[in-house]
Image (cartoon, rainbow, N blue to C red; front, side, top):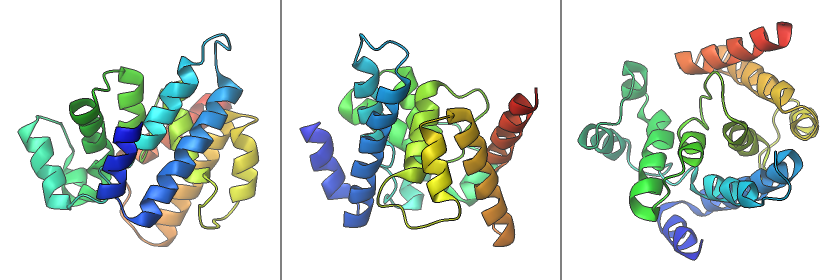
Length: 194
């Protein structure tokens, strides 16, 4: 983890680094709460690694993100090409693998999808997605306290709430919305309606 922290301190802003530490801490706390096998603390370690690396490409130049995707055949949508800041998850997963030897698919997917989410997310993917939203230094946003509580009570309800709030915020600001975010929200709404 020392090597990861050194890399992050060099490549992230001070605020982004603090956010990253908060996400890793929150992800580990959630992993302790939801660990499917309490005799195995690998799950908590995986949450820490994914939390630490989730934003490792966040402060990278957008042009460089696209260049890395092209050079390494990382698929991206037209929407992502037009809004390359969204590519930091995919590029982050590439860095995790290439620079830090992370080959665990669950960790790599958690890093890849922490911004938009995706339908049928794994437990670790949900944890990183939520931890990114609720970590301790997060600036106040509507219903943050409710979501923080939900995160430790009903993980799927927390997912639905975050996605709903995100879509509402983007719509109110007339910001473009990635189809994956809407598809993820719809999948949770559908799942909870059954």
